[in-house]
Amino acid sequence: MTATSAAALPATTDAARAPRRWGAPLWVGALLIILAFLVVYPLLMLFLGAVSDSNPVIDGFGKFNPSLEHFVTVLANENVHLAFLNALLACGGGAALAVVIGLAFSWIVVRTNTPFRGFIAGASMIPLFVPPLVAGVAWSILGSPKTGLLNTSLKWMGIDFRFDFYSMSGLILVFGFYYAPYVYMFTASALRNMDPSLEEASEVSGASAFTTLFTVTFPLIAPAILAGSLLSFVVMLGIYGIPAALGTPANINVLTTYIFKLTAWSPPLYNTAAAVAILLMLVTAILVWAQQRVLSGKSFATVAGKAFRPRSLNLGPWRWFTFGLALVYLFIVVILPTVALIIASTRKFLFFKDFAAVFDMNAYGWSHYASVFDNPLTMLSIWNTLKVGVITAVVGGTLAFAIGYTINRTHVPGRRLIDLLSTIPVAIPGLVVGVAYLWAWIGLPGGLYGTLTILALAFVARFIPDTVKALSTSFMQIHKELEEASWICGRGLLGTIRSIMLPLAKPGVVASMTLLFVLAVRELGSSLFLYTSNTTVMAVLLLDYYEGGNVGKTAAFSLVQTVILGVLLGITNWLSRGAAQGSARAG
Image 1 (cartoon, rainbow, N blue to C red):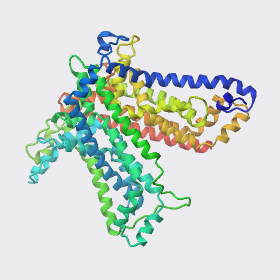
Image 2: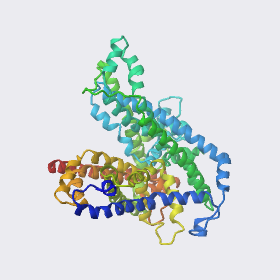
Image 3: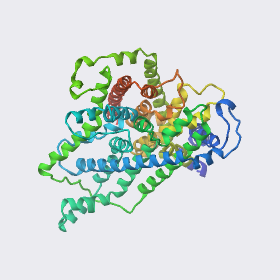
Image 4: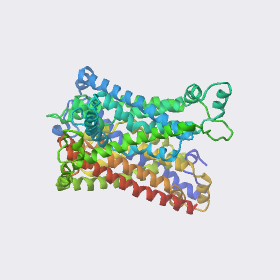
């Protein structure tokens, strides 16, 4: 066997090797071209936009006048410095709070005998599915310094304290509440895999359970804590919805809101926006690199070669206290915002002269919902969102399957480059993807800009690393002997994939497509620069309602979007279970 054929997709006969010698380069070449089209070309155009003074709308495609003026302006601009500092403060404070909440919940679920731990584990993941702008809108209704429902309640109770979520502290609190699940996922997994004998040795030495927790348990899972905090920080850094809802009214700009303002000015400052976007991308890339270095470290080994079960700490009566903490968290991040949205969406005027006015049924009605559905853009945005979600799920899922299979199941030359290119978007916030695609397509002939297709392509590029990672787990669970048996029986590559890999990986494929669909439905950042009046999606229309100042319509459409997302999650979860059962029967 030649070196070329050995590196190509496996084969067992000379007749089979010949087409695969040609098939492997064509397969790799096709994937590289697709990834270059989705990732490399937009980023290259973003960079060219930042180092030129050409306007893609006026000058069209291909006309670049090199200039570093915009980079110099950005680096010297005090507004950029302030937005950068605000982003660090908001995301740093939010990540710190997320660590406290996520670590507490992972310890409660994995290491204690708190009742209903399964319920707590599920409830703690709910914030992941709440669109950021919906969360921001809900807390603006609750925590507005003058008309907020929380302040109305405090005034009625005679408590001389007022919440103000239009502030840096408001941003930190909401960020921490809604991105704690990222820390929970990392730390819960680490706690499950940690040998309990290490803690037992500490207690035998006379340390109390509380002392052991802070001197043994948490230090041993420090890499997981750090990785989770860095991931939550990175995600917060690229979020637009929450800073737009809570920071903008108080004139607190972060990098994402500042980029959007640059493109909203007249005339739009596309070059400056590109320069700031690159700055945001570089910061994100450094943090992603730091997280990967933390995860690749080997100095905190806690998993022994012997089998063990994580020990469960008997809290006694205190187990009801920890259960109460879980209920409080669920109340804060789910129930309280939902109640606020319901009140704001059904109340004719969001003004309360006193707390008793909250219960005045004459002040409620369905006028805001009627107004929302009288707007032709509402149904158009719902339909556009569903179409973009389906296109993203199908195209992105298919591409992720091809990439995941190539990376994890073959030894073809070029697979490392495919892995690298498909991982790059991890370090690119959604807003930066939108700016990059704006530069890539707005001046290019062909009419792709302003279509649902460009939205779907941007979403695929944005979320391809998440999908490939989700599918890679499924591929690694399938033994190579099954493929080898198929090849021995004379099946080709596509036949083996169709008859062996796809049926066995079906649950993972459905799960990854479900993930893509949900992410596409709730994505705002990538959409902001790519939509037109005919391609408006729900996330963008919600932002339009909010910026229009009509709180009732905003709350009504927030609930509409949340209900639709919940129904879609239920349907896709049902499909995922069906796929898993079908795969089990096939096995």
